[in-house]
Length: 391
Image (tube, rainbow, N blue to C red; front, top):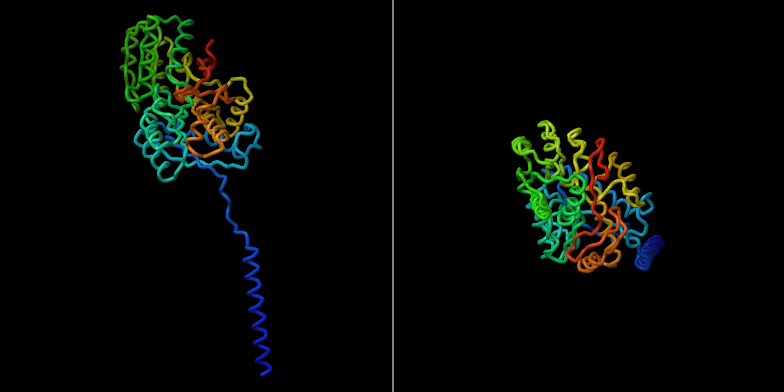
């Protein structure tokens, strides 16, 4: 009996200790080892990572990634101070639009309806932006295209914005500067008839030529993906123009310059948004080519020089307009989120619309009433294989 009572007493003590432990856990619960993501903000990104524009999409992604790394880690050398709300981390949800307008619409719908983002960076091309922006506007989600330059795309609504200078800004300034120096009177143009930016730029050129009394001898067209431009260039050569204007997407520009050189065409080529990558691809055939763009790698501002250095060290190459516009778009968006003190799309929209003279790698940056960018355009010429200021 004594043994039995001893066993019962021990059992009661064990149960008591267990109960005490359970009470202790209730009063002082163990902290769960779960990462707190309450201050993490998701940003949708739509890029052409495959398809015709994949090379440009990869450069854009590099610009996005560098900006995100700096913003999330402001102690990095070159990061812009006070560039994000305190203790906030940003992450990208990236979708490939396959270089097609249809792919961009699908990507926007997925990010909006499945991922629930309040803001999207993209798309890249004007053709994709023309059909994707209405999706964002209809759903009251902010969309910012880093690189689409066709006129009028942001005017469809108040939730859509763009970073590049549009054709109605760049073309008149470019014609003013180059006409004053080159004095061309008889010109020819070539443009991509299925790309929105290229067709719009050619139309803007035609308007500028008419305004100055410049004669257009011929307007030749081609299509995205074409590789043989010899027929168009041969017809243009026979007319002996003073200059040739080309409106095209990145993949076609080197081929046009190379084939023109092979045909012995020596008059100036003025090419849309020419980058160092395309200059390198065209080699000696690019020498003397002129372009109208919104950024110079040699711009002597602290933000720009730090960006060029950090990008070059990170990726082993010089940045171009695709990378810098994407980089700038992240900082501009984060500035708006910080000013809005909210992730609500309407609040971000209002903060973006109020951005005036923001110090960026593109210079002093503002949005106009249509949501298009306002900053100073640049005219460049290829000299010694490098894009340099046209002077």
